[in-house]
Length: 515
Image 1 (cartoon, rainbow, N blue to C red):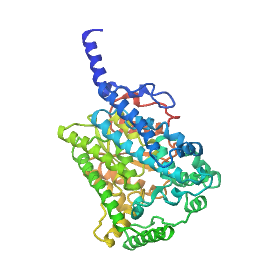
Image 2 (spheres, helix red, strand yellow):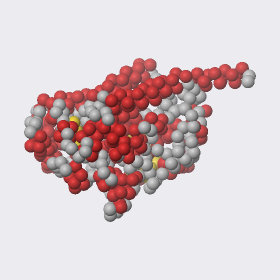
Image 3 (cartoon, helix red, strand yellow):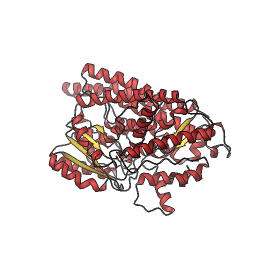
């Protein structure tokens, strides 16, 4: 080897190969999409990934189990519920997919968001197991009587007045929402289960999966009532929007829920506890706005699209938790360092992309692939912007009004089915975040958004906006595969944008059996 090649090899070893030479697709096993060997990111980043992400997270996952209520319940839960084993042990492969190709500060900040989600998930399923009569010989224990169970579309903040006395668990969030990101095959069994008892295959697959969870033993309200044998309060999201009377109705439903909890538990509503937790949540929101400001106006934002989107929707919907503050404190230091040093976190960016509508949960990391392959940097996601508000705590009336607004802006409500005005908030946010391209999700079984497809197409042409459509079926990877999504983006980038890939090895590969 001549001196120049030796020098290049040593440089690649120390710093990692530059983007155009990495050939990340060559690392993937055929069919499974798992790594043949670890990605070499240079000495510093590879050691960081091995020690501060792989070893640290596996160690902390064990620690989270050991310090939770009834640690032994975890092993019972693994035997009892199929989704635990399918997602808990391979969770670091979820990190691998979402963090593929990342270097430096972007690797560190994005990984902390993943760590926060894993920790809060363990807190929740351990509480579920501790309170689960099926893991305790049919007996109702103290945890059972001090756990408030609710649907994942009901914001956890509704239960802040009892945060010092009870834990709340959004029932479907763990076995459905989180798991299908980690393992895309986990919820297919639940979709098949609910169809096996007569549900047609055309409703929203999210609703099918949630109902199937209860059919298979872990939700519509009727199934919840039957399964848990606990007092039930129905609190559906409204089907109208931006109506003062509907907001008043929502406020009354929240008050009804508070009265219901008081009657069932004998524990009175605690205004001070509500304010304490709302102020803590407002602190999280204010930092989120700081992050958005850096993302919108600089090239120094160190969080990739999938970490930003998943962390944000999980945090804002679940509600206040000390872990979110710990993660935000770490990310703040990284982000401030990036701004101070003018660190360009995603130097291969060709297009700044805003992702709109509801995302394919089984391929939430498509944006990591899109950046590595095409230089498409997903700066912000629609679901990240749902709860663009803080909540007043200066009076009971103002607090209740803002909580009703927050409740109405639930997942897949405000921009997805909230009417044309909210659909078209896209243009405002596209300008705010200085985006030049739109990734438009097309949830094939969503009855709320299908009629807007043609309207958006007309607007894209009128405004001369580059946009590609990503068809999908939320958690069901059998309807539209990951490979088909990649092919659609590849075709758009070559035939419409006339661009060449940054990493041709990522253009086509078989991950049909991938988690």
